[in-house]
Length: 420
Image (cartoon, rainbow, N blue to C red):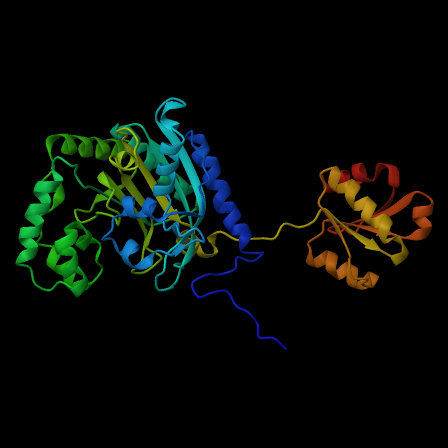
């Protein structure tokens, strides 16, 4: 007997009973994002490696350690997407979406992402994200709308006890001076982990991403970027906070929040759940006003966010249940010579919008009834030769147990009438 094959480490199968929870998650996202004027975009699962290196940053942990990169048969370096923004921006520039309609362009996406990291609760090497990207406006009202929409998404799902952290990462005008201040501080700092010792020379801001207690303690005394903003960034950030307060969105200013990608500027935000322990982030994002230019496009301000589906479902727990949808009707074949008739009837019912199934393994009538119960069938059709010859079929309501004989000519109507 052959060995049982298993899914690769860090991946998982989403089975019936759970897949319905995922479907609900996607349906809520589609409804809410659509209400705000977003259109769906679908990008390739893999891109040229440079698409991600250019956006995320050569020195980032994702590029250095976590990307699934390979060469195709033509010698091209390709990478399974580790995040969604870079692909959306590449598509925006390639297809000149900014010229095809009014700005801003509002897009949302959902799909698998891939990162080689240690699997843990709610975190896999193949994982699912939902995200939005808005390109073409630097209005702080848009920042507030995006963050408000994210909170509405969570509230609609039933998530409680959430904290929305916000910060400003400045812009190319004020950030260089801040990085100089930070570098001077880090040169004399002690207690940094080996990884952060390397980061302080290549990308000091990334040190704020470190979760090591020693680094976190050291950075408490570091200069804060929000204290070193230019007048324009300070005014923008103040407007975002004021608009969010006016919208009733409760936020906390986290002066060390920088997020994990090099492309962020100005507004950054992260939503955390108290139900997930130390790894408590369930979504976040920010502005990336200079990223479109890195892909050959015109100067284009933009903002977006991504949410981890596994993390959301873990935070929701049993508050969102997945139930396999029951059938409208199950056809029980009393005489197996009538399987072709059952097949034809099933096709007729499905064409009328009725969910329907039948036995395909030659089970007894008793076993077929058990199957109908397992499939949560609302009604059962008993297909017997004598009744069928007279143009009739027995129909049973599985909830009440009531039975009636219906004409084969009006079968769909009878089933629909019983389901009302």
